[in-house]
Length: 221
Image (cartoon, rainbow, N blue to C red):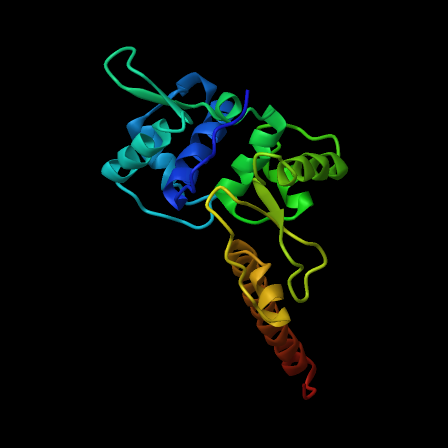
């Protein structure tokens, strides 16, 4: 049995699939997902790149498109319609490959080490070489590659991998300095600024103590 040719998916379509795959493992008690839960997962502000803001109508349109290649299954048990992914059966891929594709769909291009960490809740890979092995299989699929190893960025020590479900990824040509700055997250930058402010306050306090001691001893500081 051959796998049917997969159409080029939009960013939202890959986000919908990624959310369904992720929530299947992280919130199994509420899976399959309702439309509200699926929209919330798409608009989630953590563990997502890029960030998006979509409506229920947008997500419903993406769901309709994904029903064509049988990547989404709809169930109407109870009063709320729920949705589940059909990635493993629809693409005839093992759960390990689905875990890696999910991480790439939700977070964008990543190194082997990042993929191993970010897919841990979906599948725990023994080591980085195992991650690379499954990526190589996805890149060499006879039906068409699903991932690609990107050229090494200036200043970067490792290459990154990207999924091809939305076609050839756009590679940003950034200088080394910008690449290094971009490697720090907003939280890391905020933490550094807070540490600098704290140290400056401590230095000012120490200066006050030294000044008071000098005054009491009758010496100039």
